[in-house]
Amino acid sequence: MSLKMTIPPKLPPIPPLDDTAQQAALDRHGRLAVPRGGLGRLEVLSVRLAAMTGDIGWRPQRPAVVICAGDHGIAEKNVSAFARGATKQLVLNILRGGASINALARRFDAALTVVDAGVAGILPKHDHLISEKINYGTADFTDGPAMSPGQVDKAIQLGMRVAHMQIDAGADIIFLGDLGTGNSTSAAALTAAITGMGVERVTGSGAGISSDQLQRKVEVIEKALALHAPVDEDTLARFGGLEIAALLGMMIGSAARRIPVVLDGYPTAAAALVAARLDSNVVNYLIAGHRSAEMGHGVALQTLGLKPMLELSIRTGEGTGALLALPLVDAAMVMLQEMATQDDAGMEGVL
Image 1 (cartoon, rainbow, N blue to C red):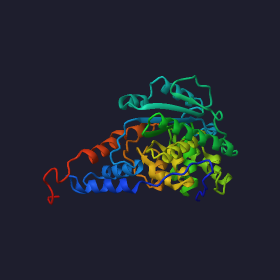
Image 2: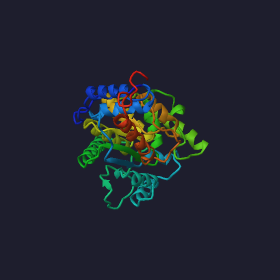
Image 3: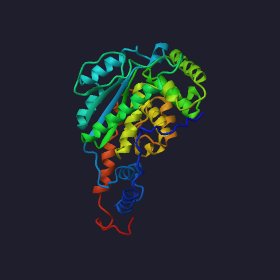
Image 4: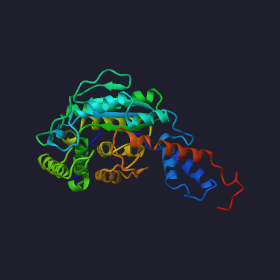
C-alpha cells in the first residue's frame, strides 16, 4: 500500500537545496589535506548541511530541542509497557529537569521545549511548556479513526507555529523528540500502511513489553489496517497521534525556513514518512540522529533514504538519540571549514 497525499493549502512551500553552497562544499572537500572520501559520512553530512542552510560557513550555534507529547487510545489494548497516564508523569519529569534529555540539553546548551498536543491530563504552567492541547489523547484506532481530520490539521498547524517560534528566537537547528504512551503502536501502523511492509516486520517491543503483548500488538495493528483500508489521505487521522501530527508540522515549518531538523526515534520517523508524502522536499532537511532498538525504525529511515548517524539501541524517546548527534553535526562543519587545504599543507599532488 502507498499513501498519496496532496499539499494542503495552509502548508508553506519548501525551498530546494542550495546548489551553489552544495558545490562550494564539494569543491572545498576536494582540496582538503585528506584523501577524498576520507571523512566518510561526515563529509556527506557537511555537504548536506551547507546545501540546507545555503552557507558553507554554517555552524550549529543555537540548538533547540522540541518534544511533542500526546497520548494514544490504542494503549488501552494492552500494547504498551505503561499505563496511559505515564505520559503526563514523563513530561513532568522533563519539566523538573530529571530526564536524559535534560542532562544532554544542559551539557550542549540546547534550549528545551515540550509541546502538549494531546496529553491525557492537566499539566502545570511552565516556562518550557507550550500547552495547546487539541484533545486529551486520541481514540482507539481499532474502533474507528484515532483523530478527526480537523484535529490533524490543528496539530500540524501547532507544530508549524512552534517551529517558527523557535526559529524566530534564534534556533538554527532543531532536534525533535516525542512522548506518548502507545505511540510506537501508532508509528508501526503508519509505517506498515505507508510502506506496505508486513506488520510483524515493523512492530517491536516499544518501551519493553512482553512477547505476549508484542503478539497482541501485531494483531491489533493488522486488525486496524483491515478496518481502515484502503490507504488514503486520511491515513494519519486513522492511525496517528496528535504529537505525531505536531512533529510533522515542525518538520514542514522548519524546512520552509531552511533549518536542519534532526529526528529521534520511531514516532519521529513515522511522522517524517507522512510529511514526505505531503512534500517530498522535506526529506532534504532531515537528518537521522540515530536508529533505535525498534525494528520498524530502520524500515522507516530506509524508506526515507536517511542513514542514522548513531546506533546505540536507545529506546527512551524524548529526543535523546537526536541530540546525541549534535557533536557529529558540529564536527562535520568544523572539519569542512577549519582543516588545511592541500596547498596550505604543501601536499598538492600528493593525495
